[in-house]
Length: 159
Ligand code: MN
Image 1 (cartoon, rainbow, N blue to C red):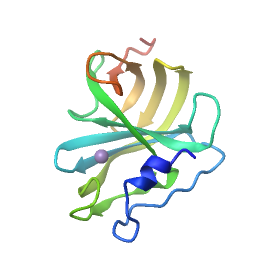
Image 2: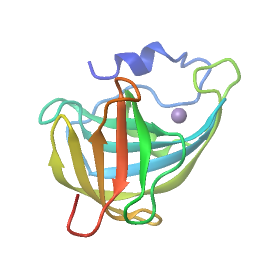
Image 3: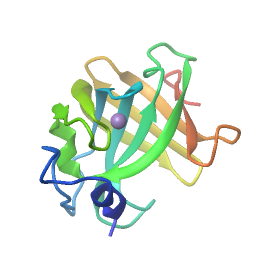
């Protein structure tokens, strides 16, 4: 069950966020949601299998405190958070006061991605969004805690 953590954190009688469904095929989409929670951050989500090459389809998710890199060579800290259900890709709205992640969510960018590489330490992708276009990589990093990655915008040839 990929989405247990997602479900545990939320009371679906109170929040209008989507419930946990797990489709079998990925449409290779991504979204960036601007989340005005207690700390403003951007949630970067990739529609892909739960595990590297198996499992149901979820949104692998990272909270990016300073926003997504938009010029080549930029890198930002991205903290991996719990998998979200694919239906979350369209979510915009207000998470009520007192609920997990309380605050306003709006879509900052969305589109499709092409997967170049995915292993334990690197996820390399080409994004086709409106704002985020081109080759990006998520690179597992140490020094900022267990779930920390860097997201980088790369040259068209890669890392
Ligand atoms: Mn968030």
